[in-house]
Every structure is written in C-alpha cells, then in structure tokens.
Image (cartoon, rainbow over all chains, first blue to last red; front, side, top):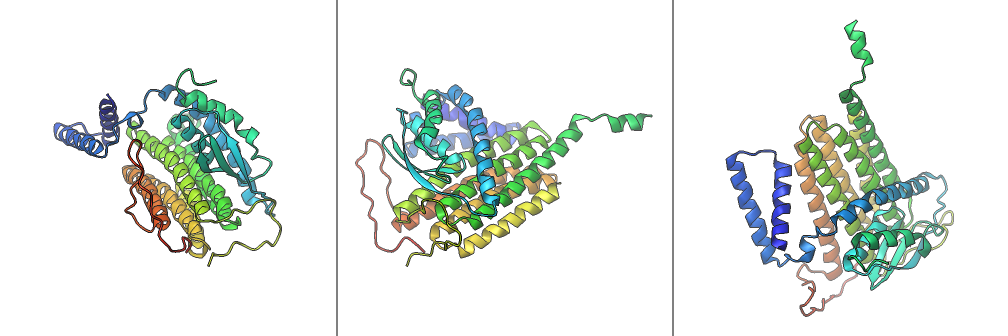
Length: 161
Length: 124
Length: 106
C-alpha cells in the first residue's frame, strides 16, 4: 500500500520532469523507478511517513494562509533590516502546542521557522522554544491561530478540538 | 493602421514577460536586503531571521517571475518542484542550525539592542 | 530586466561571502554558506532563462537538495566529530551518541 504510494509519486515525478515519452526513455524510467523502490526498501523508509497522502487536502487549504502570514512577517523583518538604527529586541519564549500527532507538531514548528522573525529552537513534547526578532511580536498568544490551523490541517480526524 | 493596432493591444505574452522580469528583479532586491540584514545583525539567531527573508520571499518572488516567463508547462512543474524543496529544506536547515548553536552553548542576546554594542566574539 | 536581477543576485552573493569570511562563529559561516547555496539555485535558474535554456532548472533542483544535505552534514560533523553516528529509529534500541571532546566553535 505504502509501496504503491511511493511508486506513484516516483513515476509522477519522472513524468513531470522529463518531457520525453519515447519507448527507450520510458524503459529507463521504469528501471530508475524500480531502483528507487529497491533502495527505499533497503533503507526501511516504506511506512506511513513515506507516503503521506491522506491529509493532502488539509494541507492545500493551509498553504495559502501560511503564504499570506509569511508575506506579512517579511515586511516587518525587511523594515528591521533597513532601519538606520538597529531597534530589534530579540526574545526567547516557550510556546505550548495543542497539536496531537507528530505530523501536526512538525508542521507547526516548520511554519514558525518559515515565518521570518521567528525560529523554533527546540521541541520537547508539546513545548517549543521560539526565538523571535521583536519582543512585542513574539508572545505565546500570537501563535494560537497558527497552532489551531495546524491541528486542523494535519491532526487525524476527531483529534482536532 | 495595423502597426498602431498592434502597439495598442497588450497581449498576454508581452505582459507576462515584463511582469516576470519585474518579479525577478524584486526577488533579487529582497535577496540583497536579506544579505544586508545578515551583515548588520548582532548574533547568529538574529542573522538567521534576516537570512530567512532570502529563503522565503526572495526565492519565492524570483521563482514566481520565472514561472511567469516559462515557455511551457514542464518548466512550471520544475519551478514548483524547486519552490517546494526550497521551502521544506530551508525551514529544516534553519532549525538544525539554530538547534546546533544552542546545543553548543551559544547564548542568544536577549532584550533591546543598545547602540554601539560590540558584536559577539568567537568563543575561545 | 533579467540582467539587472542577475547582477543584483551576484552582488548579494558577494556581500554574503564577507559574512562567511569574517563570521565570528562556525554557525555564522554555515548560515552564510547555506544562504549562498539558496542564491546559487536562483542564479542557475535565472541564468538558464537569460540564455534561453530553461533546462538548467534540473540542475537547480539537484542543487537545492545537495545544499540541504551538505548543511546537515556539516552541522552533524561539528556536533559529533564523526559521520558514523547511528540515528535512533522508532522501535529499535536507541544508540547513545558519543560526543567526543573538542570545542564545537571554530
């Protein structure tokens, strides 16, 4: 089942990147896809994380919102870079997440890191250490919205509050 | 006057080439701004924030501009691949970098920056 | 327009090299090199478009992935002073990583 997911992903990736569909090229494609499958079997990475297609729709809804957040945060950091006086005040805060599954937590931590101005430094259980560029923007309350959206996008059905 | 008519019609190809060039230039300027931040900020943790401008909006705008100029769909697919890989890997490597710095005992500077504060020195 | 973007990218790469050269700690240097790699990806893509050969994007994809792997490899090496550290996998007994001596800062 998971093997089939990887097979489909590898074939789609090859098709999208090659653009040649002669029989010789398709033969090479089959060989390389099979080699990839053998390698991933040897690495023992054929499991649920290897083909995470179940919650693709949730992620598709999450990405546009994240893009808008990243753009807004970019503006703040760009202004900080170009100010004549360096008025930054870095801060370290502890953020508690309500996400249940590993995937949702990783999504939340990666979203914090991807947003300029905040970086996840460490994760332990459901607590995260976040370093921020401005003290005023980096309070635990400012991550509640992102946390709820991550839980909705990536947590299994029923676990989300 | 067919030539004047041609001049007046703004066809999609002209628009997208011009718009793509503008987006590429905007992205490259954002890269310069991020680099200025990397040069100005006082310690590793704050420099990382400046570098993430380059990784997110700089790369995003340059790739958006290239996608607008793409001659066929296969190039757009490749650009989307580059964008997805860049977003995933830049977040992960930023986290790995900052976590390694904290584990190694590099203390971040906290609180408002004073003027004339010296940069951090290399640990002995 | 494209040439201006190319020149701007090259200028920012040169500025970044300054940080890579003077950066006080190892992590500044790794950060600069990682960001340099991202800009190289953009430069390769733009170069392909300027030369009218967008096939360069294949190389850009590869460079993205290799840049990530090299950053992680450098960080891992300076944390454990070895590439031979087995990572713990779920369901298997955890192998304690042996951190040998040596200051992790350059």
